[in-house]
Structure formats: C-alpha cells, structure tokens
Length: 435
Picture 1 (cartoon, one colour):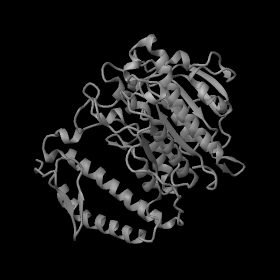
Picture 2 (cartoon, one colour):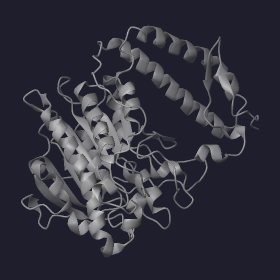
Picture 3 (cartoon, helix red, strand yellow):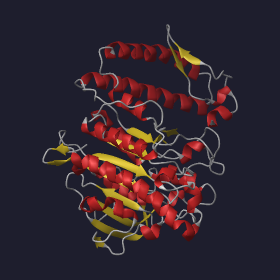
Picture 4 (cartoon, rainbow, N blue to C red):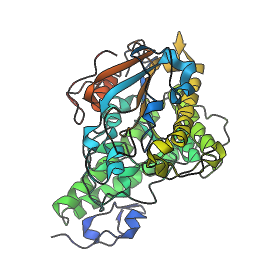
C-alpha cells in the first residue's frame, strides 16, 4: 500500500533538495495539476511544425501531381521555395480518429501514431514520438538531444475528457512522459546558450552534488510506493540521469560563443514576431550544432486565438466550424501560418554550410493530424516536406499516395535520413516510397 506523501515532499541530501513529480501517494489529483548524418561536419537535422484545427483543403491541394508548376492559394506563401519542397497528399493519422476529443487526439497522435488514453488525470498515455526516437539515438552527439518550442501554453479549454497536455504536446519521450514545450523565446535562448560563462563549472558541480545526494533518498522512498508510483519515480530518476549525462557531455564540447541578441522576457504580444523569434532560435541551434532535432507547435489544438493585426478577428477554432462559409477567413489563418514556414525556410537557406545551405541538410515536415476541421477528418492530411537531407530527397513535386497511407510512414523515412532505422513508429507499415 502506498504511503501518503505531502505534495511538498522533496528528495533531500546534504544541504540539497529536489522536488518530486506528482505521485498517487500524494492523494487525488487536484486542480493544481490541470491549472546523424554520415559526416559529422554536415549532419542532417529534423524539424516538425504543427498547425492545428485543420486547413481549408480546397486552397491547399495542388491540382496536379508531379512538378509544382501552379501552387494553390495557401501555398503561394512558399512559392519562392517551390524547388525546395514536396506537397504530400493521401496520408492519414488513423490513431487520431474517433468520436469526441478529436483535437486532443490529433496533436498527441501526430508524431506518435498512437491513440492517446482518454483521461483527465495525470495518467496520460500516448507513445514515444518520432522526434524522440531520433533524439534517443543521435542526441548524444549534441549539447541538447532535442528542442521543443511553441507559442501557446497548455491552458484554456480541454477537449472532452482529455487532459490539457494532449492538445498542446506532440513530443513524447515515452508513452507516459510528454515533453512540455517552451513558449518563451528568452527561456529558449537561455537553454541554448546558458552555461558558457566562467561560472559554468561551479554550477555543474552543484547540480552533480544535488543529483548524487538525492539518489540514496529516492531508493529508500521507492520501497514505500505502489507499482505505478515506482514507475513514475523510475522515469523521473531516468530523466535526472539524462541531465547528468548532458552535464558530462557539455564539458566535452568546446566553448560556444553566446550570440549578441537581446530578447525580452515573457511572451511577445505580436504572434508573427513570436514565431519568427522561435524560428531564429531554431536556426541558431542548428547552426551551432546545439541540437539536430526540433518540434514547433505554431499554436495548440482547439486554439481560439484571433489575429486582428493580420485581419483575422474571429477565433481560429470557431472559424473551422463555419464550413465553406469560413474558408475565406480560415485561408487567411492558414496563410499566416505558412508565412512562418516561409520565414524559417528563408533563414535556413541563407546560412551557408559546406557547398550548400543549412536548408540542404534539413528535413522539415509541416502539417497537421486534421484536414477538414469541421468534420474532424484525419484523412488526406495537409502535409508539406521541405529540404533534401543532403540530396537524399527529390524536391519540387506534388506526390499523391494511396488513401489512408499512415502518416508515420513519412516519419520512418525522415528517421532514415539521420541514420536511425527502427522497424516501426506507432502505426507505421513501412517507410514512405517515392521521396
């Protein structure tokens, strides 16, 4: 039987303490929970950009297969990069299908290919996401195994019996460990470049001390816990061990110059400025080889954000349920999101690397687990793939796959471009052909 623990319990050592994750032994969950490449000098990078609530598909899909000669309205935003992209039709997120909770499932199933457990409690469960499959195999080659960013925190309305974490999290380290994204550009910058000053060795020594001291305390505590809490503690301590390994790896890397950037604290009020700051930080992270794996949620599922500064006065999610009447305004939202993709492509293409550009060493997947937002359809998804991963992808095409081809087949193909080969990810049935 679990021993009752205070929510303020910490693992203590000599003058050190480390807070615990939420455990069942602390009592019922309350509202406080809700409130690489073949050459080291030219590695491939993987990026996933997620857009929520579906897309005005008539204004997304090219009319013909083959070369991208004529782009539809939404894709006009990336017309300058037509030779660097592929539009992929026919892919499906079957794990996101079902009644009620479509938006929570959409985000959680996007990279996992696993239908998330319907729960409002802390026992969230999905599957390991494709980005974390990559991070677990190539992340030891960089300072950060992966980077997860976004523009909205996981607050507001939660979807029909699903914990709010689902609607705003696409990266999952394991079936029960969501990777919570950072939405504050200043904090992302500090994560990328902190620790390059004279005090780094002292801070790292303190961190090691804390982790060493609490380990013995944690073993004693584990003997008092039930099976589920022991699993949570094991995952928690595994994460701590990864921090230790990151600290150890950091000491083996040469000093990294800190860019002379001034980024205000908090969340920028202007949405486009927020997105572009995040894009700039992703480019910096790749350029400095701090990480090679990144996810970026442009907004959360169910987002009701309006963009009056861009002529969009209604909430995004509400617009999608106006059907054909809302296509004009939804197209404006879709084009705003696509402009951020264009900005990222432009920044990557402007950075020279070897005989090409940084974009040439990337694969950037842009899309969603929802196509028609009003119908909550998970078939024929809006998917765009940019970059050629060192010449291993032929670009400039519209490729149409058989109906209901698993989206996770694309992820398998992307993983292969960073020399990560696994038999499956989620509901995949094999890597995507014809790329």
